[in-house]
Image (tube, one colour):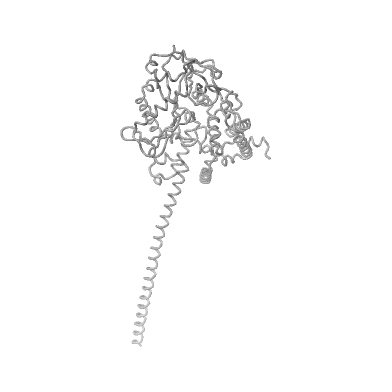
Length: 496
């Protein structure tokens, strides 16, 4: 058994961590092909919704990006985006009253004297959003209204096949689009030539006040907006009046101030995906676990290696699974794992403990747990071709621009003509690039072998022909020599 000191010494080396990071980091280069399309779809959809519903047009403020992509902790393909549609109610915000709701939630009261003139314009709809007695704002009613706006907007589009709509983008382009409901979000599934995007649209109310609620004990001396979203609830008394807190701006700032922890978060998410834990362990749960560690300052971001930070967080994750509890960072009374069972969490904890043990004894074991079989095959291919670069820290995790340059080197190593245009390469995953390249090179080798075989056969035929000619010439020479010899003999006899 390896001593603890020896284990800690091994974990100070981040070589394997950096190698695995190559398969996790999303370089900006991969975002460029879809970034302009994302912006176009967002703008087109917002204009469509505003044109079909006057209340939405009057209340809509802007779109804000949220979620792990916004925080730069996303793993996998950059095809999923969270968009918060900021809605401003036609009320005097200073008169809004907030009350404690279920853990992680708040209730919103809109007294009659808070209504602005615009409320009167849309009273027929807005009055249905609040309770008659205590004037609580219903998340259920707002969510249904938002669903109606989306349905009404897309019903005017030309229908394609199998329930898809055709959304014109600009003057010459169009995409196929479909709507799917998921919790407080409505997912726009966008299919375009060359790929797809999933855009989660969530209506959100933005506030800047600091009401006397428990969650704000961690928001002292911080001047940023916070949000309430209509996440559906099925438990508690009058669950429809509970609105879920969202502090994505603060969470982004927290991670930005402690940027070294982001690669660790991405590694944990990659492990979750490779171990098929996504249905139990949401991305936000992993991030929340890290928020607690940053708050308690139990981790040394400056003096610790990335590998040791990863093991530390794996230990915390194992403990959370064993306790079946990850407290919501903003309200510890809310357990994010409350709906998970011991049948789901205990085996996960045992598996994590084994992974921790294996990594501590041999950090190279990370590749077995954090990479898919295809990625491990590519990892071995790269290692065997250029092990010196890998050993020197291939794609350092603390420099995303350097990471992009290293990956660009791999792309430049491959022949762009094999895959088509350079744009095709830029939008492809490394494993796809390698697979296509190997296939193309194999076909080229077969073609060359066939060509060489034909040339060898032709050369052999030429050689055989030359051999025949040489033999014929040798025969002729033999005849000529014999004739000359006969002539010499005749002359000799005549002289005698």
